[in-house]
Image (cartoon, rainbow, N blue to C red):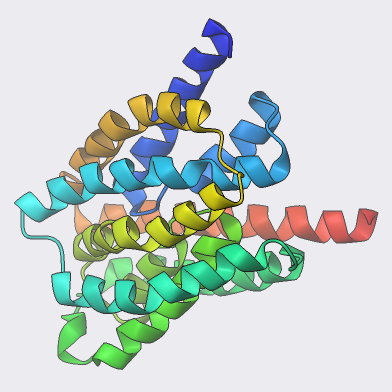
Length: 256
């Protein structure tokens, strides 16, 4: 790796870290395409390499949310309990499953939940865990874990919209809870992909140098933003990601 490539990896990590702390995601949605297009990593390596970066990134972001009491630890625990085995299955399935259709389905679901988050900007939120059973969080964890293992992301793209949109959890708490769950969610996928030899550890190390401080910065921004504005930002971000996923996979299917 050249010094320029190392600096680029740090920069990619910094951007992904800010997004992780601000939007409660792992950052793989930025790192995977950037690693592939800007650093020239093979697709499966670009998909797997963000996973070990996501762990310290999520820890850094979650720590800031925890300091102000914006993490629902029981909810995170239920999602992790279901998400860990699901993430293992998802990671193993990358060897045999074409992810195109899954990405399109995920994009459609994400777009719907993103709209729900934005619509919630104009009305008061309710306490999610008063009406949501552990089974609900287990179900969210299963879906998030499968997506995490299959796509090399933290699962926040599933957890944040589900908690803040479907369950109506206060958005800051949803972001913090998502980051806390991501810490456990990506460990099995990281181990599986490491065993399969899909991780470029040098790229991951440089990316982590930027991602960790970036996550703290992103969390600081989110915690200082009003709920209504934050919902507009997060919902808008999720919707853009959903459209990007859907369009890219639709074009790939047409071209293929």
